[in-house]
Image (cartoon, rainbow, N blue to C red):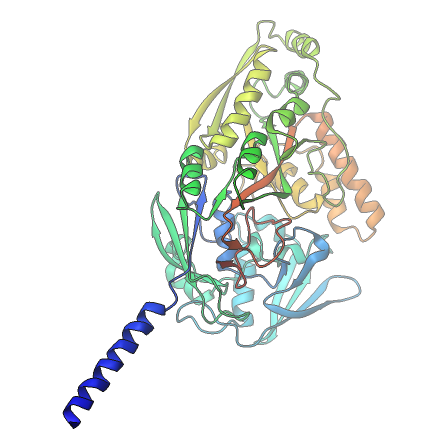
Length: 517
C-alpha cells in the first residue's frame, strides 16, 4: 500500500513538473532588421555609421541621457550620474554617479575611473571618431570613486551633449577596453539594458538582457539585430513575421504602403539627417568657385525633397540642420538655374561639361538619392562617375580623400557648433590627425566657429554661427540637399514603453520597458 502511494506521489510530481515546463514563459526575442550588409563598429567611440548607432545605444549609457523617444535638448535627464552642477562661469562641471551600477559580465561596478578613462578615450583621435568634441576639456578628475569633475579651458555650448548617451559620451569599462584592445570593436562591455552576446559577420549581432541593469531587468530577453541590405527582402521578412522591427525606406510610397498593414506602427521621427554633397576644394576643378557654384545652381533641393516625399523629407535650408540651436537659412543659391550653371562652367573653361569621380555607398536609400543628384547635374553637363562600394568601404575611402564629391547624410547633437565644427572647421579635414568629416577642405569660417564656441553671450554666439553659415554658403564648400527623417516600422506586438517621437541614435532606444506581447 505504501509502495503504491509512493508511485502515485511520484506520478503526480512528474505531472506537475511537465505542467510547469509547459507553462514556463518562452524567451522574448526582438528581431530587428537593418538596411546594411554588416556592422561597422560596436565600440561607441568609433561607431559612426547608421547601422552601428542604434545597437550601440542598447549596450551603453552616458552620464546623462536624452529621455527615450526624444531628441530635444530640454529632455536631458540623469543616466549614470544621479545629479550634476556647474560653476557660475560654466567651466567646472561636477557629476555624482549612481552607486552600484554594474558592467556586463564580470567587469565589476562602475567607478569614476571608468568615466575618466572613457571621456579621455573619446577625446583621443587615435581611439575616437569624435575627439574634436572634447578639444575644450582641460582636465577630468575624481575626488572620490563616485564623483567626476570636468574642467574646461573655455565654455562650450554643448557640454551635456558630450557626456550624454551619444557618440563619445558613452561610458565603457576601462578594464574590458584595455583587456580586449582592437577586439573591443566587436566584443564591447557597457552598463546598458542589453549586453553583447554574439556576432556573426554579414548576418547578425545578438544581445541578451542585462539582469543587473540599474533600472531593472528588461522585459525583452534577447535582441537579434539582423543585417538585411535588400529593402524588398527586409520588407518580406517583416510581413512574414520573421522581423518585429525594421529600418524603413525614407520614401513616401514605402511609408504609405506600410501604414496600410493592420496594427503596424510607422514612425518618421527627428532629428532629420541632413544630406549634402561636400565638394573637395583641394581637387581640380573643384578648386574653382565657379565650378562649385555651377553645381549648386544645377542641384534642385526642392525636387529632391518631393522625390523623397513630404512625410519623410524637407528641402534643406543651410549646412546646419533645421531646428538646431543657431541654425539660419543660408543656401548657396536661391533656386535652380541650369542656364546659369552652364554659363559658369563655360566661364571656368568647361563649355562641354566635366566629369567628377565619386565614391558612393551601395545602401539602396542613399544610392537612390545620389542617382537623382547625378541626373540633375547631368542636365548641366556635370557627369558624376559613381564608384559604388559597400558601406564600410565607402566610409573608409571618403576618409582617405578618394572622392571629389561626397554625399553624406547625418544627424548630430542639435547645436550648430557640433555640425559646423565636424563638417567645416579646417581641423576636421580628412587626412589630418584631428579629422572628422570635413570632406570639402573648407576653412573659411574657422574664426567664427572658434569664437562662437567659447562665447558666453548667447546672442553673440548665434550671430557668429550665422556668419559662419553665410561664409560657408558663399564659398560653396557643400551643397545642402534635404533633411530626411528616420523611418522605422514596428509590428503590432511591439511596445517601446514610451512614445517614439525622436532619437539621436538613429533608431528606437530599446529599454528595460520595451516589450513584445
